[in-house]
Image 1 (cartoon, protein in one colour):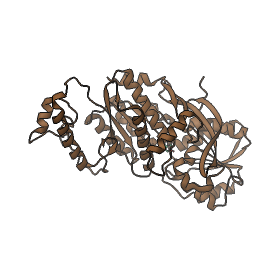
Image 2 (image 1 turned 90 degrees about the horizontal axis):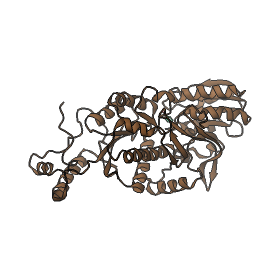
Image 3 (image 1 turned 30 degrees about the vertical axis):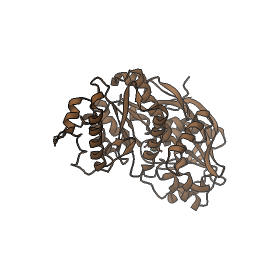
Image 4 (image 1 turned 45 degrees about the vertical axis):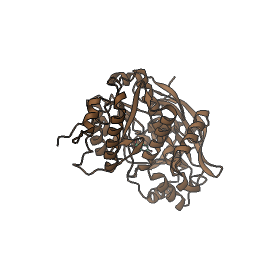
Length: 444
Ligand code: PHB
């Protein structure tokens, strides 16, 4: 189907456009595609998702506003800078979408919506956590919506799908979360702002042995970041003298963890090592763990921080107490910048939502976007954008971060313990492995 251009009225300040908007057959922005079933969000206005009717109303209002302002509109005014945001707003990883939106909102409240004279317009698209939807939405953002940058992503398969569009289109994609190291290998326009599981568990394997854990039963989800977590943890843990007494790979679709925990118990390890993605797994794991009569004394848990996601804490309850995790961000991270971030987050977030790792990564992605736009005076070139990202470094709520020459994140990794502070479960950091790359190696 041939689509009408998705431009003109709301975007162009030209008087000619205004005149066309005002006419009977006004050229409105193309309607969102109707040829395939899609979830309600099709765009963004004032930071809010809107549906098709809202969208028409918005377009009409924009035309009217331009008519009124027509006398002052200037042909040389810079056009808004359109950025696609691929968020997981529904489906199993829906919490990520809400958290990242809150972080973006606070970034823009703090730093405004205009950089180098260009108004930043985010076009949010709901990926539902599905790779096939990412591919389609990313392609449309590039070819129809003419975005100049893409950001977002919550899961490894989504990042791989985004790469299939980003590479041929030379479209920079700033990844919020997707933790499998190899994602960036053949995708020169991708940069990662979250973490890799290898980055966390490589030092964690060594740390575990040095802190008295000699035998471990390993549980890791059977897909990219889980397989990487299992492989890397086993390597550094055994190299340091530890022994893996058994292992199992539960599926990505949230399983009942009871049978896996029974096998772990039967193997009599000193502790369980587990990687499972934040979305849904922590509650399922902790329920089975506590139903099996396990706790931090009789079967300590060594996990990546996904399992102690602050947003799932309230459902986890005291079963989580004492869990030792390794991660790049904790709400309880003790720095003035993080205290400020946490305060701003709570004042902008819907009731009950807590700041966690995807929110911080989204906040940092916005920081990087503002940096690259400012450095190019508002005129984005994909290759310059990627060159600027390489070597970029700044203070994040999680501590200092940098993007290296491989476009991957370099950051501190923290060892934390779940404790109750003021009646609230928190990941209390008590050890830091400073400045590690995507392989978990120290960077000088
Ligand atoms: C991923 O798919 O890469 C992923 C998802 C959720 C996590 C960590 C990694 O908590």
